[in-house]
Image (cartoon, rainbow, N blue to C red; front, top):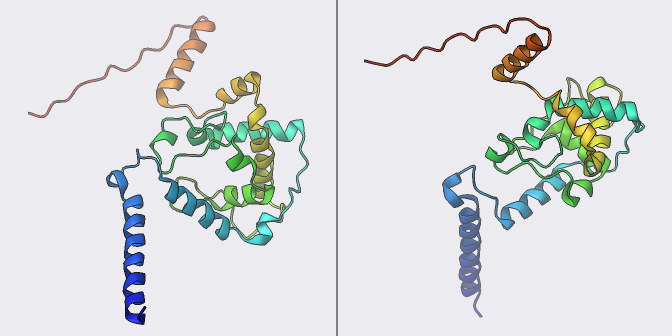
Length: 212
């Protein structure tokens, strides 16, 4: 077979591969409601793996696991992470379901099989092109465990390991630390006033404004 023929076949194969990748990425008109294809998930997982430095993957958790540390991480997770990941780590939330890709179920092997170092790196550095932000503080302290931000992240690693075994009592406690919106705060205030025997404060009447 001539070299020119091989080049043509190779070019056509590359074009076909590019078209397949484009169709995979552009499916459903770039809607965030869509589910990533297997090709996208495969590429994303491998890209994330390559992005994490080998030294970071091998890092050991310098923070000892303890009931106190678990509770600190549990309440931290409820206040900062549950809005996307849910208290149980399943990712079934209003915001999480609207992201692309959706937050992973942290209880499943795809997360639990990651090393402590990988989990720490993801928490500290985030994941580009997803809704996962970086939580590292100022300064380069990755893998040191010497700063408060790193300590919190290492404690979160222990908590993520505990998610498959989260108890109903722990979830109930977390619900009290979830961020509250104005309506939730107003309802909570009314309940407290009722329990304390005070007259509930009246809600301001809403006025509808119409354009004429």
